[in-house]
Length: 73
Image (cartoon, rainbow, N blue to C red; front, side, top):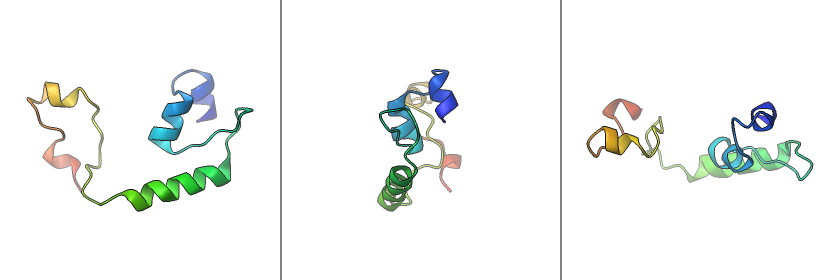
């Protein structure tokens, strides 16, 4: 993840929001905070969410569907 951030493939915000990775001010990963955030994210899931997040453009391309029937486990 740190390399992807350095190469600007993922933003710091994206690392946190999309992957649950917490960075310190010096740019290193905070492993304890990352584990805590990921535990919180897992606990907040209802089990009803689609397995794949196809992004905001999917609804436009699919004629309004938020996800495909195969995206749900």
